[in-house]
Image 1 (cartoon, rainbow over the protein chains, first blue to last red):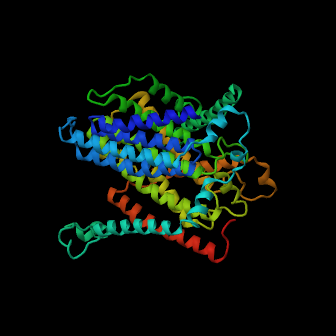
Image 2 (image 1 turned 120 degrees about the vertical axis):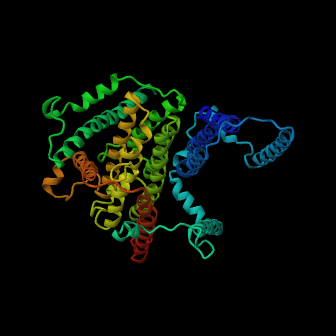
Image 3 (image 1 turned 135 degrees about the vertical axis):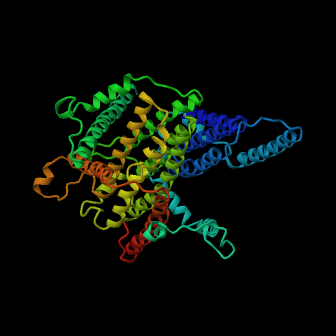
Length: 195
Length: 329
């Protein structure tokens, strides 16, 4: 179990770094997919199946495919890996700052877990895990719709805004008229249209 | 430990091997039924009334030479068929064949099937890109766009079912249909599911990814012999999987049509197979009868008809369930 967790973490790190190292943009997107997959496997190992499956459906099924689409359609040729003198130190600086910040945050959140070595050295049955039979969908529902109702509503509003923005881009306004080609299927198929 | 691993392997084999046999005979059935529709004989030479045709086809594909396009990306080119075949097989893990015959009775089985079918797109995209051919590329783009758009409407249809049943577990969905199959209260959704199923598996009349007249054969032009056979198996296995899913969601899975004497004697797996057969015959008959859709019509149907209607029907269903206090649990 612990070995698998470390394996998945290693896979995640390797594929994430290969995303920026690999020269072919298509390969980088494939490594992005691999890193999403290993992140989802990590969630499975943490027994958080609902989130893991949603990670698969949304990130792999929608977002990564859109990335693949764009990369395939844009026809980008092999890009040279260039270490510009300006980019490299700035990148290292930003990366190091983020790393230190994240490390501090993680130290605060995941304080020393006594349960971990407890599990390894004792042959006790962990009754807490065995009795915890509530499916995680129920747990999500109970927490999201009681304690974090406001946050859920705000997130929903933000998503709604995104939907409206996308709809606005496609709907013909007076500004767009004449610039957008209009298609009417019934007119296209009717007999009068044929000359 | 070793014992349980052997048991699990045997369970997996006992699902996979009959599934592959079913796929093989599905192809024979397709050719036979299409022959009957078009008033010809279909395959009737190999074996008794052509029943060994599937094995002969498999043997032919097995002994042919596998060619690799010289400018292709070989790793991805070989990965793509393996990936799509693997994904089409592991979807069967959560399908309940009868009361007890299910490999993994997990709580989120529908989400699992959903995740698998959304990963299915990768096989096609990778195949199209790695072949380094215009036709394969166009076919892959088409099929990916088509599968993504119809997945969304299938998702909303499944959400309505989950709201009626109160669970995402396929066995519980079947057990909830003891009184009445979900086909009756959710009839419009059933029709939409069947049509989306055709588009999701890239079948006629939505087989634009492999429109022979325009794109030769779509994403798998460059594939030959076993690599092609893997794609072929994956496609037909996906069709059977979708039929099984529709049987579970709308036709009450292993349950008999009426729970009275003559029907209850027949074992549940037989009823389940019959219901899967309905889906399979539907796939074949639509292929034999309907002409191909144009691509913009396909997108119009998916995004402007099915998606709004599925969302509207979800709201309608939940509204009725809440107002009559019929929500499960």
